[in-house]
Length: 568
Image (tube, rainbow, N blue to C red; front, side, top):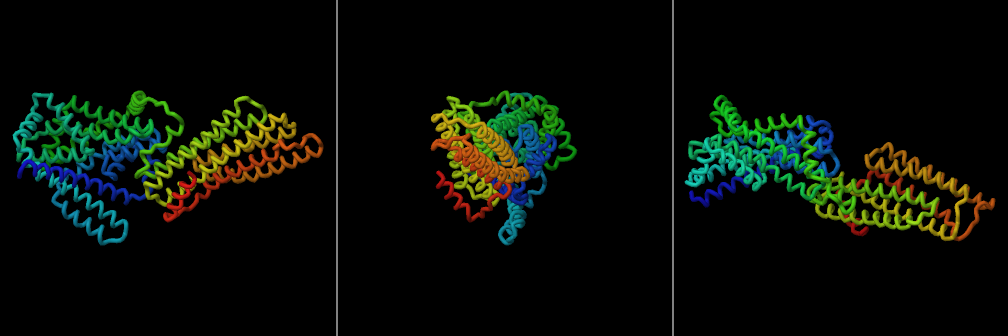
């Protein structure tokens, strides 16, 4: 076999291996169902439970990089804090060793059988469970088939003079420089293939060929594994580049963890080597690949145990390295377009955060209008214009974000419901801004015409504004936390607001009759009451969506797309 053909076998084997890992991970995710994110959120309350969850999640995804990307997304969406994420990352580093353990097991002869069973289950069964199980077995078999294909190419490749000389230098116990070179080689190779499992799988195969066709000793293989542990952080780093500040800090903690572990074991490489060699001679002598699997497991468990007691310090270092950037506005720091493709649930979480911010702006606007209704401050109009434009800007940018979301993804029933609800909520907050802008105009007319509120009118407006402010706070709290009980209180409060408006109207009529209030075309008192009541109607709409989210079928997604485009 020529060198070119040998390289093709190696590349083809790597491709089959990576595809097998991806297929098996995808099948396992589907077997787990749609509750994966909810389970993660509920099982990361402490670093220890986070480690366990991260370990199991990485086994499920068959990729520590996949876990890293998922964790970065959850942190960016505000679904977990940095300390919870660190626990998951620690667990992911242990979980990623499972692939090397599987590779080290003496079951490669059954790879083709697993492929056959997997294809039969996938093609000839209609139940989703059987199809997903078939995908898992098919991917599992492809992992071993890919490794065997790599071995076909590796045998003649490692027998070339250059590779034999390089392996000899890597295995030279007297030259520590080549140990460092092994770490660098492992780092760059893993970063290139974007998979530590693939890189370590190849290293395991090379060690398996030791002495039979090449000289690739344990002391030469261990630094490469240390390098692979560093190289795997590149995927998370790339995923965090366009993410939030917290996502970048998660990636930095991942880098610090793997760097610490690799440097520690490089410093103590001799004790590490002797410990692994001792285990190999007693348990794994017939199974060379299992030896490196044990070495990989040992390194990650020891690193996790040591750094578990320094989680807070790791977080402080990450925060010190990744400082808070200066954003042009709040919304830019909230929404993240890197999750629009392939992560609609996370993208909708960003929409929710944007809506929470939009609600806070609308509440600030109400407080401004309340103050302006009793005192003519010179800058109230400018502040009103800025807040109105800010709400309109949020309206447009959140709609643009949602257009990209529905254009690039097939939404699930649950996500379709959330999108429809959020679409309604955006409209309600924007309309609240319009009513508040109307109120500023009404009060401006009164001030320009020297129309002062009577004591009775002032008392009624204070009463109205106070109740409306309370209702606003209750609505924002119910929406942010999906609190159905508080949402029901909002609905009840809307009835109270209707009664307050009616009472204020009757009181106004009585003041007109008694001569306490004078009627002019610029009084606008009734319009003021009407706009306040309409604000309460929109708050009630938001609460209603918390209680009864709109049911949108998959067939209605195109209708939702059309509605969004019309709004823009």
